[in-house]
Image (cartoon, rainbow over all chains, first blue to last red; front, side, top):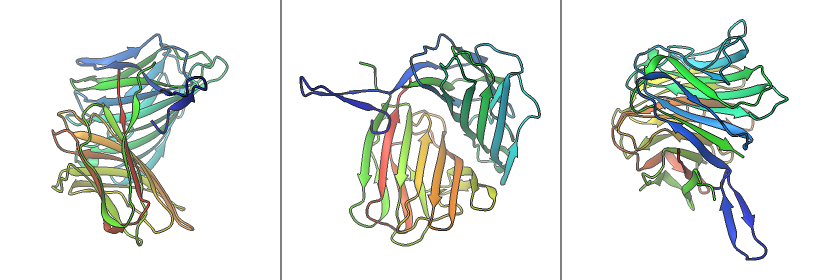
Length: 184
Length: 165
């Protein structure tokens, strides 16, 4: 684990033990639902990472996220995305009630995976708003329906993140996976 | 001791020039793969990626990239490989960096991946991201990068495995 592990040496025994700094916290394999929540997230890591691989029941939907059940307009985000052979930047004009993490152009595709990696930085801080970086995309071999997204996100709340809710306009089908990791 | 969820599977460093860089027999014991590829060329040239040795029209990709002056989007469908040098190239002295995440690489559904890359040269430069699709129901067991001519010595490919709970 060259990138993320820390190697600890023991002077007394001379044995070198490797410990992980990238750990799996929980995984959901949703089917027939459009919302999933990771709750009781421990505050023992520096950052969180979420990797999703979602099979969507219908096309053209947005996938979004909320923290700690907060449904008020406390989220901002900006998008840079490639869609149908164009490069586009966009952002909502005002604060939103959730944070979009995929689907600025066409949105979800069906049959083929919609994937992404989300980094939530310093999530356990109780003094700072929370910054999020997302890279996501989907491709179904149709130029006008495939997109690659980069998103920056902000949750304007200094509370530690203890729960993350994912939701979409369509159900997650069998084969979907959303995995939560902690980074020390 | 916590279970390690991010492990190096294999790495290869070219000792001399070669038209391909390949890692095969990738175990099916992880959830996702991350490829870290740092290529050099024997000359300025293009290169691509194929999976499982498949050169059929089973790939598609959509990219977003920028150089010193503008941002671009592009897409390709039913391609015979993944072009990793859109708007750029590999060169003899300035290595590019590719980080490619392949999701659920052992699943029985089609495989989607995300790629982000950096390709700065002495004057020009290019960076980008890409979402790609490989249409297959087979697990991915082999990754191959192919240069238009040859990769140079000290080209490095490393594959990591990522586990979920």
